[in-house]
Every structure is written in C-alpha cells, then in structure tokens.
Image (cartoon, rainbow, N blue to C red; front, top):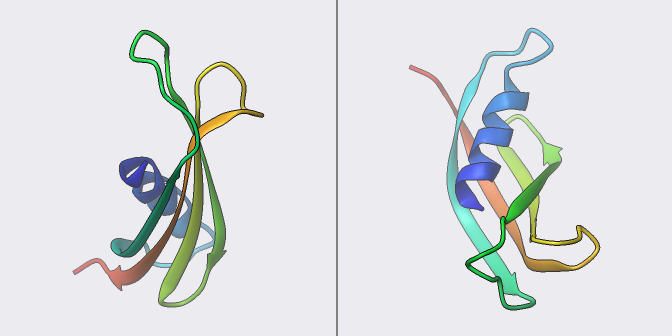
Length: 84
C-alpha cells in the first residue's frame, strides 16, 4: 500500500508544468478490515486527497472480490522534496 501511494504521488505531482518532487513518507496509518486470502488477487485504489507545496495526503484501499468490501485501508502523509 505504501509503494502504491508513493507511485501515485509521483505520477501526479509533475503535472501542470510544476517541478516533480520526491515524496518521503512521514506518517502511515493502516486499518485491517477483513482477512485477505492468499489465493485471491488483491487490488489497490489510491486517491491523493490533497497535494500542497510541501505535503501530500493519500488514502489507499485494498480489496479482493469487491471494491465495496475492502480488506484494508490506509492514510499516508508525505513531505514533498525537490529532486536534486
């Protein structure tokens, strides 16, 4: 979930003529909602809730059979640093 959120922030933060910035995780909170089965594919949905000049907030949901029944959800905060 952390990797998916980092990649989503990277994918979105260089758009609109803005300089791309490297996201560094500073806070991570996860809620396990159900048992994830090892014989089923797990899918992840990421949503950047807010991206400011220095911070980005991301919500991630992991699900297997239905996106309406997630097996885990997470909230992450990233600090955005310029690429050197």
